[in-house]
Structure formats: C-alpha cells, structure tokens
Length: 262
Image 1: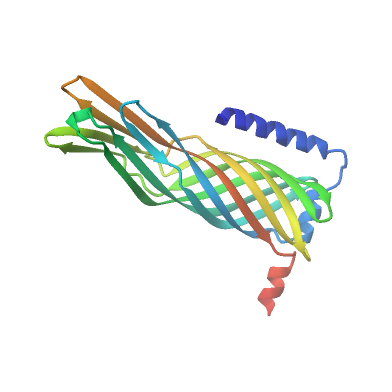
Image 2: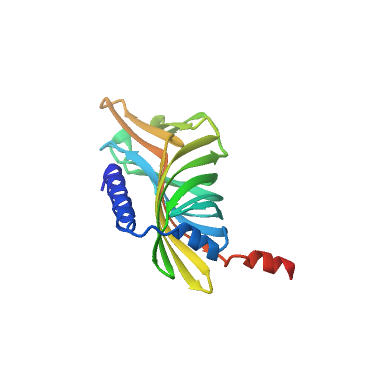
C-alpha cells in the first residue's frame, strides 16, 4: 500500500474516531491526567523507510532494520478533551547496504555481492503533539494525535565518492550525499490507547507514522560495461520517514513526589 493511501486512511480513521466520541462533552483529558503523572518513560520499536530505485542490471538498496528508541513523554497542558504534550527520545538507526552486480557486466564471470552495515547513526527527536482524549470506560482512553517533530541528526559528512575496480574493470562508482543541516522536521500522525494497569498506573500503546520534510541521506551506484556500452544505475534514499510502535508508562499522580520524600 502506498504511503499517501496509508496517510489518507489514517486521517479518515482519526476523524471518524473523534466524531464518534464527541457526543459526551466531558473533560476526558483533564480526568486522565488528574489521575496519572504528566511525566512518563517511553520505549519504542521503529522501522525506518528507505526509497530504493533499482535498475534491472544492478541492485543497490538499503535494507530496513528495526531500531529501538527510548526517552520521556511530558503532558504539559490539558483542556477539555485535548492534551498537549512534548518529550524527548533518542534513536539509533543502522544502515544496511546491499549491492549486487550480476555476471556478464564488467567482464565478471560470477556475480559480485556486497552486504554491509553502517552505524550507529544516532538521531534525537523532540515532538510537539495534540491528543484528542476519548474515554472508553474508567480504565481505557483512546487518543488519536497530530503534531510536528524536530529531529537532530549528528552526522553531516556532505558528499563522498567511492570506486571499486577489479582487473582494471570498474565494478561500480558510488556517490553518497548526506543532509547538510543538523535539524530537520516533519509531521506525526498517531493512534494511542491508554490503559489503567492497576491503581492508576497507566500504560499507553501507540502507533505513529512520521513524514519527514528532508531526506537524511542518499546514495547512487553506477556500473559500466564499456565493451557492450552498458551503464547500470541504482539508487537508494534514507527518507527520514518512519513507522513507530511504542509504549509509555505513567505512574499515578503524586507518585514521583511521594517516592522522592522517602
């Protein structure tokens, strides 16, 4: 399913969910965060999205690798059914590059294959989110959300070029380009459910899609066969988009203060 279609379905679902719970004009966000702490710890599993464009004569791609992210959530303001929150979390992304040049190109008698990883690539994230809080019952709250997220990427190498030759034949040229500004940003679309585990210890489960405004990195691979006048080109881009499945744990209101006094 294409990204645009996924976003459209998610937007329709958020809108429909909000309307379905709008019949009761109760301050659900205020009720929830009167019961629980505004500060929570956060852990998620992320799936970065890469855009691979391949030529039939050569394969080059970034292979998706799941990565963990961790940090904190802070719900700083509630009004009626709306909750406003921010937070901070860190993510370590690992690039897995796969290159395949088939036999026949460059005079190769067998295929050339390269499978490598590049990491750690740390990114630091600061989201600003607005949650619509709908009370299902005393123990479950449904929370569709929209927001914006600023990302700091610590590596800005610019542009680099590599060349690999075998028996005076160029197997491939590689041109790598990385984002030249440390801060990028994009929009978040999120669905969450907060569940009272016991005694107002709430755990929030969320699924989020992040649409970044700037590509993080990109690479183009070219292979040449001068005898047959053939050029094969494949490229891949680290888009900055990602899917995220996470959990946040919020202790009861006043729990942190009571623990600090002991």
